[in-house]
Length: 100
Image: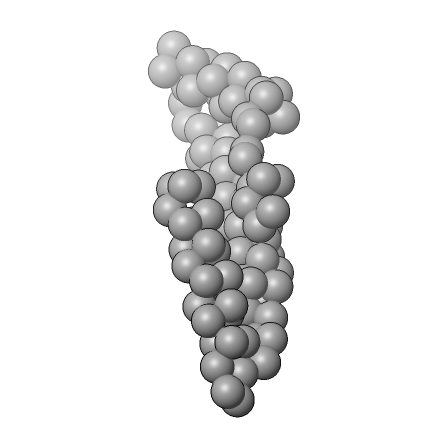
């Protein structure tokens, strides 16, 4: 996906260069707008994903705490706690090399 997005950015740069060469041409700054938008878009996607995981781990915990004590409940609550403790282990490509 990063390659596709980088290729799209390169096409915007080519279009900008061609437009700037035309008789009424000028710098469009479309690449700058793209860079800003794509970084903001991915930051929002990451935040929403992290919120989704937290919200649903919370919901799982609440639901299973209200269930009768048994092996399944213990296993689920153990797994929820383990997942919660490992959330910082998830590495998200924040597109540091996209837009350069």
